[in-house]
Image (cartoon, rainbow, N blue to C red; front, side, top):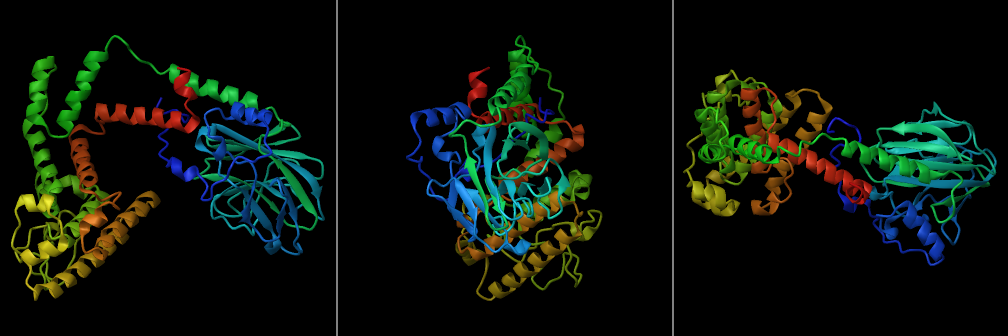
Length: 510
């Protein structure tokens, strides 16, 4: 099931689906109209559903009717710079499963340069939908589809006065399609971004006018049949997932045992294995070594953790430069907090006395060993774990004359982190994460109390860095084997996320 595109981990903040300005249910909706919306989107708060165009989120050349549904272009329309767009008052809610709206072309105006589609918050409103990043549009003058680019692709027929164009957003399969006068034109866009998207239209020449139907009136296209088919498809996918109901207890025992071993609880794992009669075939020494490294990271002794890892598992960091970079960033934070020393002395020399300070990625070099520098007095382990106040720590380990040297070392370390980031592979995903980690590390300098900065960490908190390092060591000894219980948890999270994403109807129907 985890390989099915319908079941993927959808980690999105549901609060981002709300508009920045609250929109109340329009007074003109009667019971029949409200019932129609509830039938389309039974698990969605009606206050979150787009029901009208925004009077604020639009270009100046756009005029809006009192009911918020009709849009008229009032600009000069001489060039593309005169284009004007408007977004709906709310984004498409995540729980809609399949969202759909239609636009009636009241008048094509002078040239019919109109675009209908979806756009993220912040997209330029002086451009037709589809011309900018995270913007998607179907244009009436040429029938082309525009996918975050000024260059369109042939898609469907042109549309003009009297036509009704529908835009459908399938949030499960992450695609967008259009209809014309009740006929489905097929998929226009796939792999839409995991951001909140707003119904959006754009006009460009004088006299262009359209009216939106966000579901309070019957649609030209029978969208309900598509919603029904999609619900059945996802429900069937979940129901077909193989489960052997006769092996629950042994399976749970194996899950617990694998979790204990993976996280270094060797003694507990042995006792549990004896009690459950599950064979214990793990290398006890290896488990204890991993636990020691985890304890070093969790106590803030990153330099010693790196050194121990290099000694016991020399290929782990040598083959995983991004992990090494994460550890170095965390070491920078620990030094700012006063919990760890740097791999070089205050005069800029490394541990071997070289004048040029370097933290190379080549793990075979002796210069890369993060040997603790004894320029400062060591704190107790309890202080390292429980007392991270910079001012308090600084008073214990520095004299006033040391502060300037320490600040220089912080700057030197920061420069080296930036240099390391530039040496890493040009993989875009890793590059973006490394950039964020670098920002998180430097963020700590701005706080007199690092406890205040800790809550802003996403990639560099001790637990996350510790888990990354432990996983890398486990994978070294067991190939690409994943911890069973973590695999199940991830699968369960994906299912729950899908349920929240689609609306609770999934669990209601299984």
